[in-house]
Picture (cartoon, rainbow, N blue to C red):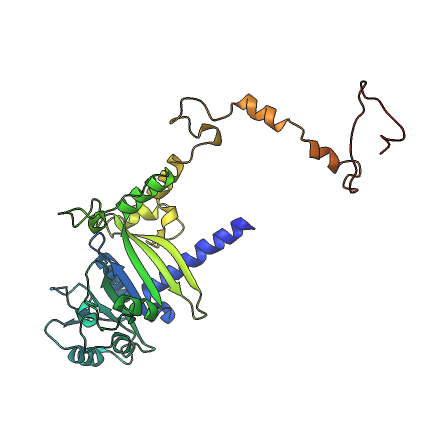
Amino acid sequence: MADRAVQYRRTHNLLLMQRLLSFRENTSPFVLVLDSIEQSGKPLLIEYIERAKSSRSKIIFVSYDTVVSITGVDTFINGRRKSAASVQTLISSAVSKDQKSIIIFDTLHPLASDQSVHLPNYLSSLIAPQVSLLAVYHLDVPLEPRSSTLYSPSSLTLLKYLATTILTVHSLAQILARKRAADKSLQEPTFGLAEEMEGIVAGFGGNDPRGVILEMEYRRKSGRGVCEWFFLPTSSLSQDVSLANPKTKEKVILLEDHPLYKQHSLEVGPDVGEIGNEDSTFSLGLTQKQRLDREGVVLPYMDAQKDGGGGGGRILYDMGIEDDFDEEEDEI
């Protein structure tokens, strides 16, 4: 029963991720991508654009960081030095009524830092039954508070509340390093700005060229959330990674199915009898003979389960030669 539940979770979450990447059946109207210096969200945006082109959807790309238009984009809107209202007008004129459209923001920081823009209302006005929204938010870029009120939520909090799906991108090399340390009960390493060392901005292993790890948080209409980790390989390595699951041609796979992720799990999973042998001056394990002797020990409570045991309050005792039996006192 447990294996069936695990298999159902794996299949369901993998199919859900495929639908999210393709914006199929309007699965998630607003997808929020959280990236950082350690791992950029651009590879994920490229994957969305490629899938949107295969489904013949119109792609409207609003640029604040990107200088040159990405291949496959139908409408490229340069949002720099333009007001939020003018950008909204350009987006509305580019949206097609007869074709599914996908609006992509390469960053939301210019809108989030604009005091005249109410971010939830602005983004909600762009979403329609045939229009989906994909936006990137940089976690390591600080923003000034929008209001002097201390109790006002931050822009990131509002975006997380408004988004129907949150995809946080991570570096493969850094995730493997953290998993290796966690499996050995060691302190997890920090990278980049989290190291809090002068002069260090980007950590080792950031923006791994092999692919991107996706941490998905999908919100259902009922309010329940679905969380899962995936690995999205780059185009050059997608065929090699797909060999892990030859039954499908889908590039995205579960993180637990990644060969390197599973390899680390096997390396740090020794037998019970071998735990502590490498760090101790004496053996903490059991030999094969000791295991057999332990399994052959008959515990006292095992006899109570035989010959009508469980009668309640009965004492099972075998008289010995040295015992002095008294019929009146020792009668049971």
